[in-house]
Length: 140
Image (cartoon, rainbow, N blue to C red):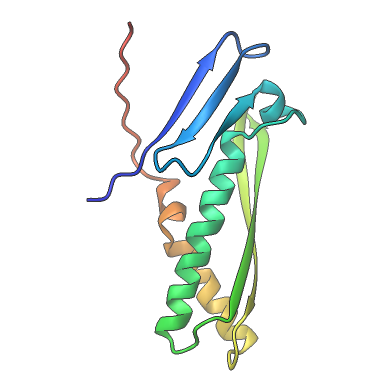
């Protein structure tokens, strides 16, 4: 089993506090805050990172499917737009839009769409959104 990790640290209250996010691989470490999450402040936010992860996962899955079908892509580009909205007065991710463009020689529009729909359904992050989430909480 492969295990990946990431960390979050936060100090202070919600609106005036601040935090940092760090990927276990060391590829990214940076700040986040109320302003960067819900307004236009500098830094990142969990939804943006989820979007990057989902776009990356989907694009790799689509590349694999196209290659397995005998049509390796020359290039693929995917943008993920993560929408936050209120559901029962709670901020909720209501939609993730995956917008992908591909340059795949010899492939029809219909075949590309079919493979893209399968990749959307089958990529690890798409499936993870409905995964069981466990939690261990320790108070120090």
